[in-house]
Length: 453
Image 1 (cartoon, rainbow, N blue to C red):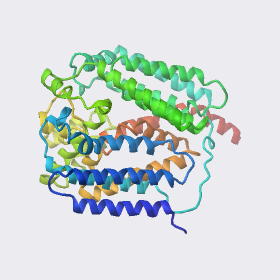
Image 2: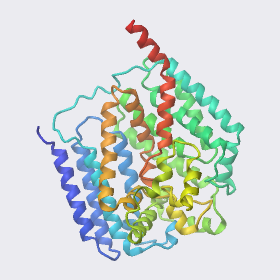
Image 3: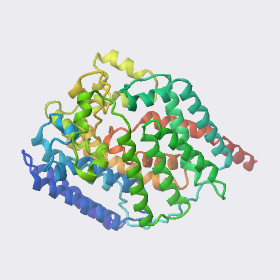
Image 4: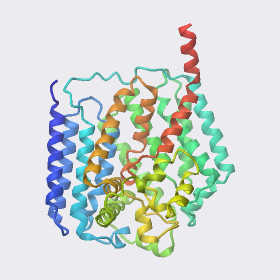
């Protein structure tokens, strides 16, 4: 077996990231942060230049762009000119910045190593082949979208969502509508993932339905589902219809950023007046369009600093995430451990440390910070490597396996937001999606059984 050049190059960068962690200064150092950020850019350029497949547009590209804004823009570009930018006005340990920046790169370099095949054998890409998608499957998904969306409205979900972004509603509030929202989201993902896999020229109806779904969600001020569906449709079109050219991709990105930024400006803040004034008190030019990503850099610093006094919390801070597929378990865990849910739920600790329990305003989190505060350096490396490995395996296995195909596109839908979320991706979303996928493929299984007879 011949080891691939790309694997050796990525292994070199992993060794370099370890050296950065060892050499990280104990005080803020702009030059060190710039060196790490520049290494990050060079590493990504080499990764895509040596990519062992023809298709460059996928999870890795969106993830690398998001990761850069979440972990490197603030210490390199913003802190020197505007240290109190947005939520960075809240206290954090400045001297932890170089160490945290190095840890972020350690995690990312291990992730890219996981994305890389050890073997140098060439792969054939036969993208779009391996399994069939039927009209019945898409029709079932579309009916589920409409049904669950109506249930979501009737149970007050749409009104609650608009309240969050208009007049200070609680973003953490849970009701019956929360489950209908999840089912509506999953059904929409199913429709988006398989629309461009359908053979023939009858996709326009499903595409138009997805566009209407995105438009309705944008009217509430929520952008998560819209971003997820857009990413799925872009990558799926590229993989199944025709390759998107670089100039087309650049136009899509610019238009997407402008639309989402305008939505952010147009919606009200879901916080009190003091918090709103802090969030909106800065102007750093075009970088402000990426505010929702950049502010999560502070969470990395907070979590790395927290780990210095609370090392190796292991899975304690992920118990709610791990049991999420089962409704009602989170309240049981709170009762059993007699602790605030923020200490058991990945993604809530930075908010808890700043505002205490029960805050209606969330500061978000950082995936590398979550990994580090739970498992330290070794766990960060292992978990980020595992994510890269899953991305690579689902991409290739998805060509012949519908469930792996679905899992890859679920990852794609989260490729931008994942960097600012818990390290354990939404297991409820994944498990419930697989269950609904089984339902929507009933006609395919019937056809196969009849063919065997």
